[in-house]
Structures are given as structure tokens and as C-alpha cells.
Image 1 (cartoon, rainbow, N blue to C red):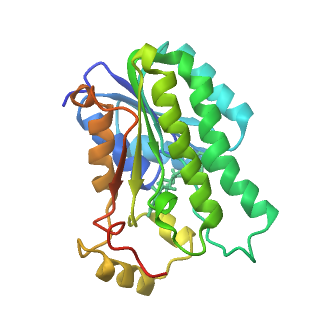
Image 2: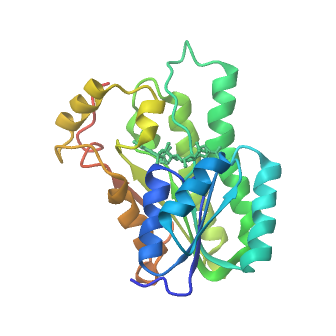
Length: 248
Ligand SMILES: NC(=O)c1ccc[n+]([C@@H]2O[C@H](COP(=O)([O-])OP(=O)(O)OC[C@H]3O[C@@H](n4cnc5c(N)ncnc54)[C@H](OP(=O)(O)O)[C@@H]3O)[C@@H](O)[C@H]2O)c1
């Protein structure tokens, strides 16, 4: 699997799955541009990833910044080979506690931001390129206390299937990856305690939480020429949790 002379853009690439995917693409010869909201964190990640990683500040929830990202891509690269929509938030809340601000935050970044990132960058994705979208196990799992988060991710999956048809004429492949519970900084941000993590690991058929690399392996494969016959597809990478769901 070689990405020599290929250009990959990853939204939310300064941490967790996005960062590890950036490292994986770089290792295989790609040029990689990562985004995020925090210039300091992006700079640190670009430095740690090494040449030829690059960064650009763009909040996926702010369409003016997403537009600037697309303009930057046009000027810097002309066209890219692969877009990985990775940036996203995870916040839990049951139906009685979710307020409008939380609803807007989740839908705005996870779905609306992702949709317009694709729309704005699409003119600069080469024919024969790919879009990979990170959804979540929640999209299909009926996990309690995640109705808005799950809906924001399920919307991505519906969009991806549709786009796989709409973009077929340009031979742009669109696929979805559903991570299970992956041990990244997101878990702490979502309020998951160490004890809860251990319970989940014990209930996962694979016997552990996922690691960012578990997702990055599939993401790089889906963006590669080896996956040229795969589009409109959805993959769970969850150590078996979906088949053996958590009783939440
Ligand atoms: N970890 C899991 O168990 C799990 C499970 C299912 C799905 N996922 C999905 O995996 C994706 C990556 O999460 P992760 O686990 O790797 O978490 P993470 O370590 O918190 O990384 C999230 C990345 O996204 C960036 N980001 C967040 N909001 C952004 C925004 N509005 N605009 C641009 N960048 C933004 C963050 O950077 P800044 O905050 O510095 O901007 C960071 O680089 C998310 O879409 C998440 O929903 C994760």
C-alpha cells in the first residue's frame, strides 16, 4: 500500500484517531494536511509527525473557516487524493437533559460541518479519489443516553451512502468507519472514568478497548488503491461490541 505522491487531508488531526491516521499515511509516503481548532495543538502535532505533515486551523463547526480551508487546499495543492472526515465531538445526555446548545454543538460539528467540509473541498478532490468518514458504533447500536450524538453520526452514514452514488461518475469512493470504544483523549472529554473504561474493556469480545491504530489501519486501506472496488460501505471496528452490545 503506497501513498507516494498522494495528498491526504484529515480534519481533526492533532489528536487520537486523526493523529494516528496522519502518521500512518505519512509512513506510507503521503503528504498530509491536518486541521483542528487550536493552532498550538496543530503546530505541536505537525512537529511531532514530521515532514511532510502540514497543519491548518479550521473549526469544522464554523463554515467560514471550512471555506478558508478549501481555498487553502486549492492554492497549496490544487487537488488532493483523499479526504478523511475525522473531526467530531462526543457528549452524552439523556432525552430529559439535552438542551438546545448541546444539540446544536453536536449536530453542527459532527454533521453540518462534515457535510459542508465535503461540499467545499469536493472540487479539489481528484477523479478517482476517496472520502472516508468517521461515524461511530453509536449510529446503529441504540446506546442509551446518546440520542443526539448517535443521530449526528447516523446522519453521516446516510449521507455517505448517498454520496457514494452521487460521486460515482467522478470515481470518488465514499466509505464509513464505525469505531467502537477507542482509548483516545475523547473518552475523558466525554466524562468516561477509568473504572468505566475497564468495564467496557471486559465486556468487549476482543477483551480490550480499541486503539487509534485499529482505526487508522482501516482508514488508510480504504483510501488506498487496494480498496478501489469499495464504495458506499460501512465497517465496524469495535472488537465485537456491536454483535455483543453493552447493556448501558
Ligand atoms: N474514541 C472513541 O471511542 C470514538 C468512538 C466512535 C467515534 N469516534 C470518533 O472519532 C473521531 C475522532 O475522535 P478521537 O477519539 O480521536 O478524539 P480526540 O482525540 O478528542 O480527537 C478529536 C480531534 O478532532 C478535533 N476536533 C474536535 N472538534 C473539532 C472541530 N470542531 N473542528 C476541527 N477539529 C475538531 C480535535 O482537535 P481540537 O479539539 O484541538 O480542535 C482532535 O484533533 C470523532 O469524530 C469521534 O466522534 C471516537
